[in-house]
Length: 330
Image (cartoon, rainbow, N blue to C red):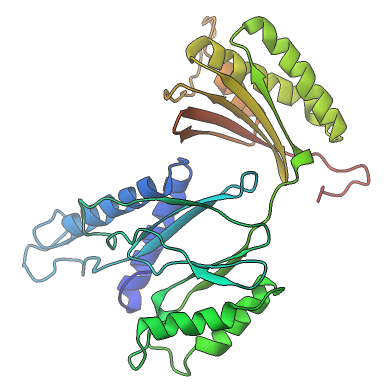
């Protein structure tokens, strides 16, 4: 949520939105995402303000008004573990509506608004019940000149405290209860319903640090894909996992784990205890190695690295083949 109105605020929102999309592809935790945004805003203000390389040197604002303030809430939800990791920078706290209709405003470390610089952001991790609603909103929803924030939050709580609603119905109820006739501020509202990936659609294996064991893991993966009726992608998946597991055995230490997730796409994950990120290389025609990750990138639709407290995860994503009736799988 960017402070202010008009063309400059809209342009700033567009720049920050693009930055968030780019930073999110790095699979960083929420507090690091906010730190990168904070640094970006500080650089924009420094470069475009008076005296900056893009300012006019007049001391009156330069070529740009500068970013006077922005708040952000960033959340990552894992539908396998039901864990949600969040961090906020001066943004209102999200509301959690449990399946029974009870409402809780999550107690997240507030953090400073973006652009102040130098102050840390903190994350909070919670386990959310299946079928809960996570409600995200901007302060324009709960603040009015003649109404304090606490009153607005209680009104929001009352509008949300009803079980069995769809996210669309919840949004309608909230806007009917809180949206003023003439809003003085922009309002954004998102209601996200949590779901959990069925246990039968996940599989994982511990892999001994022995290259001879890779063939056994490949065979187990092939059997699981056949069970999921995904035999059409078995060969490609085995090839991807062979490269990733072999690299983990060769370059990492400690336990190695493989996990498959079958959802809207097929996701392969290889966990190890190394914090070293792999880099894509383009091997020459006479090179004897260096093609493994390149092959992975060619066979997978997307791939990346996600860091954990104990190491990292290299993941790939593949599109699911069409079902037997020729339609996309649900």
